[in-house]
Image (spheres, rainbow, N blue to C red):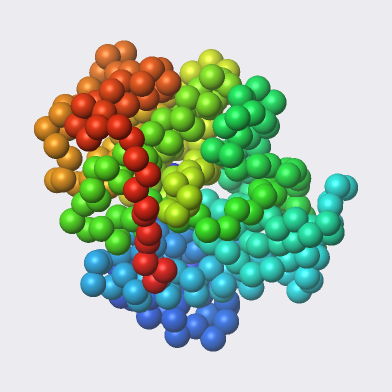
Length: 358
């Protein structure tokens, strides 16, 4: 399995930052995008990917997380100024909608999420790949979300993003640049990634609080698998929860597969240890792959606080041999409910809150 395409090493004029401290200093001291990115579009994209990997708060040194967050956000703004969609304008038009563009809302491994509002007032996030080389991953996401909307059980549509439309965008400021695939996703406020919970509870989350996240994550997978879609990258930053409402949305379907099981298009290198053996071995991603990844996410949340019975359950879901792992998320959910009832009694609602500064 190759490393994620967002992690290719850069080439750029001047010395490329080799570590976190140097990268953070360069970005935070930049007076504009051309202090950071070279003029050549391919070199600029490679430089961006290198810096994003160095500065991502989840991979920065623990003592530097606050500085990493500031530098990562600054990097996103600089990239948007250098190579953002419709640079110099405040609108983006397609055949179906006119989007009033807002600021960058988030940056990920392969794409930037830019806030926008349609002519009807619908708040959306425009997911734009940093490079046209990753258009295929945006196409995968669009195909997966379209399949879920058409074939998935309508009771569970809220467990995945709503795709408003997908379209090709040509940067008018650089006609030589290849068009990029853009996915317009309906915005849902109040959601927080599991990475926020991991930071808020470094000593582990109470298993009773992790239980509702686990249950809803299995519902999301059961919904997807019954519709013929496998996510392929159930990772902490791709699992968003609404703490107060106990809601959950599984996002970033760029690695998803439909139809016959096939190898994943890429893996997220910093999470290599979470993947089951079949992914780096370039073997087919199956429902058992998603269940393995989801279980690892919950295992991380609980840390050492998981009781013996839950640890044994986790072991059964993460066996190295793919055929020996559970494949049916709905059946696994029923088994998990039985275990939780044995350990904690009838289900009760436990209020859950995250500090707003996390």
